[in-house]
Amino acid sequence: MRAFGEAVRLAVPAAGAPVAPAGELIERAQDRLAEVETHRSAERSRVETARMAVRLLRWLATPEGSAPATMLDAVQRQVRDDGWVDRARLDIFVGDVDPQVARAYRLLHAAVEARRARHDHQFAELLQDTTVAERDPGTLLRVEDVLDRVVRPIVDNGRRVLMLVLDGMGTAAAVEIAESLGRGGAWEELTPGGGPRVGVLAALPTVTQVNRCSLFSGRIAVGDRGTELRAFREQFPGGVLLHKSDLRTPAGLAVDPEVAAALGDPAVPLVAAVINTIDDALDRSDPGITEWSTDTVNGLRNLLVLAQDRVVVLVSDHGHVVDRGTEAVLRPADSSENRWRLTTGEPGDGELLFKGSRVALGGGEVILPWREELRYGPRKAGYHGGAAPAEAVIPLLLFAAHDENAVPGWAGAPVSSPEWWREPLRQAAEEAVSHEPAPTESRRPARRAARPPAQDEGLFDLPAPAATAPPSSAPTVPPAPSSPPPADSAATIVKALLASPVYADRRGTRAPLPDERVAAMVATLVAGNGRATLETLATRAGIPVHRVTGTFTVLRRLLQVEGYPVLSLDPDGRTAKLDIALMVEQFGLEVP
Image (cartoon, rainbow, N blue to C red; front, side, top):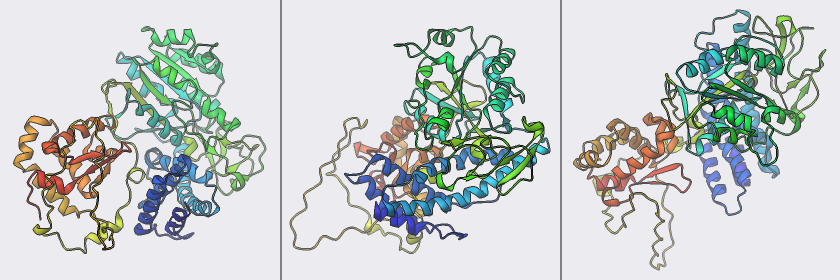
């Protein structure tokens, strides 16, 4: 762990440096991470934090790009990229018990915070401009639009809906919940047109009494539970809205009988349930160290069991920021609100003035902090109310049980994670290979006839025992690390594969995969020196995430000539391995 921490420390750019981390230093941190992951004393939580640290290094190495031009762009950046950063930096903030590793994490956290603060400021300035100018939202979804633009079209198409409002769920928590929901295979995530996930813009300030009431009213409104019930019944007279007290059950019952009856009733088009677990954690526990899932969000799994024939819409009323401990800044204010204040005095550092029809409190004018470390009220584990994207961007997730065509205009979702989240950086290797001579024909591998065929399904595959090396007095020299082929070599191999008579014969009888999908997956594996995650294969080949496992199985059958294990899956269950040399041999490919 200390060796890993030192590698992280060296890879973090110096404070204020405009340059990204060097690729070879990130690769070194990745190598040290691999050693940590395989150590027999590794603790799961420490390994996961180390993995998050490497992900953040890779994020810092990605080009930052220009500021978003529209509010829609800013919302989508939070959903598709920065929300994943927020998920990773929560682990880094918690840190490590070893002081040397902790120092490295602190340096990394500071570098990540500097970049995220720029993004937060850009988001807040766009939000201020959009709010005061009363700009038309266009395709941007706002909290008051969700019932009309998302839920009602599903109901009008004859499908029943379970809408789960997870109070306080931000984009970072949604990353974990969506992953846990899709892990079992029963639920398929849907997105507009089968494209990336979308987010929803909250009303201001980002507090429950504004946003949850606006969600159920279909307009900007302020109110309590009673107001929400009346507004919901006006929108959906035949629907059922459940709050925390409605979801409590007596001993022995996981779901209240009346709730179960409503979910099973064909005459109830919409059941909406408010689940307060995440919001409650902001007061009573530490949301920064909780791994949100269908197991840790109270009642979520049980409701889903009874909603298999409904489209599930997961949404929230606002997100949250976590308390920053000794880094938190308490600023005096006239009220005890945690993350918003009335317009007494001018906005200070880290604050902006917001006014307009979507500002529901303070007479239409409030001052909101965009810096996450600012608060006005008493210390808690987490806060909401401000203008940081972690608070103001509401995640929107749709799921259907084994039916990717359940919602017109929505289709099976692609992989949602960004590249830096799932794939190791190979920059140094790619730069090195450009200076190496191309392999000659004499360097092609010899035929491996002695290799035992693998079972087609891989159900009972076991790793082959290592061959015993003959005794020798010569010292053992470790093999040099292989480098990934350059892009033109990968294209050459793929072109030769698709033109191969062996491929044509097997494609016609064994695999229904389109050639372009095969080409995309094989090219990705070759470019990655024979390795890529299943999620990356799905992304490159345009495969909905819930289909990638089945597609991989078909590709494996296609490539395993005579049962040889050309393509396999790592024990981690998510990394594909392609034996490039064996594929070249088995398909008789003539490549340089």
